[in-house]
Length: 394
Image (cartoon, rainbow, N blue to C red; front, side, top):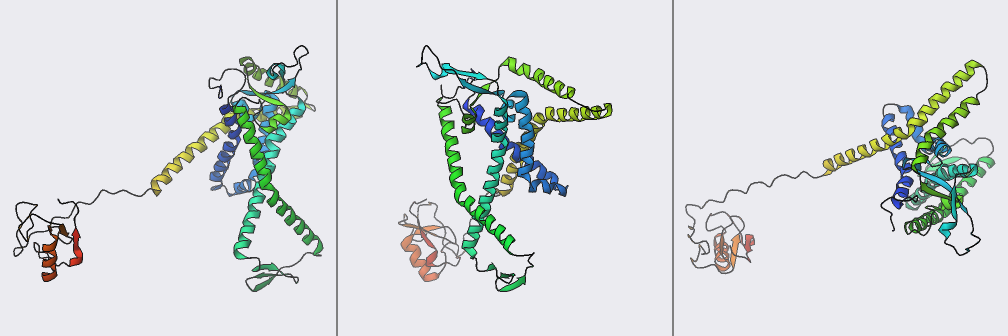
């Protein structure tokens, strides 16, 4: 089976892995939106938005470290009841050609695997975000230079900043060798990032897509290249493992409390701080999921409101104008609607007068309007340009 929709066995489905991988991005969007709303009334929160990469990386490092330490899973994987297991290959002596699945043995994560997992989950995404930001700024600078040119903005040797022919003096601090050297080095690094980042990004995305496709086809047990490098499989947690998680957390916290040293008042202060930290970590999972749900709800709400506001207002069609009245001195209408009022014969090449809406033979109405410049029934002014041929007689 390609998708394992039933959810049986220890191997997670493709959809579980995809949902666990996309959760941090949704969490970041939810936190950014929430802080942005709060910053409208608390301007000091704008500093958090200015350093959103660092703030989110620090938050995820705390959450991922705690989750890997207590559950052997990342923060998002623990929400879906998944666990990371180290893969150990035990070659068979009796049957060297045995299927590879029979030679795999799962065990708990080692310390270096937890540390490397935090690096792959937090550090690498942080650097990727920074590189992406630098690449976008460099691309915008190149685009602006190609549109406006570099001659309008320049710094001459005398220290004057030229903008469109006007000069303003910029003071120089000390010797210009060190700042210019640093500036040239930074510019060179940005240029290298601008050239290399698209290839790095394309390679990373291509490898990720290949691993996900192979995982979907059940050709590999590694969902991402990072898991392959770590030698880690993501497996479903058994019921016993889920029940043992709380007791494992209790044991870890008991050992941390026993390691406290110092006078009684310092121990009491440390216990209080640990209790606050434990409470925050216990409710962080629920709180962050609530933040994601709130963000999605608000996104849907404002998107619906914007669609309603941007949608054009549909008004009912106006009622048709009243039919023109027959003039007292005009030609009377025949009782049969297929008869021409002018020749009193069945209409040939029916044509309508646009100003009144009455239908005549084309030859009859053309001669009449050419001579009298009016509609024969209503006596309203008309010209031959207001005669319209009808290809379906009414």
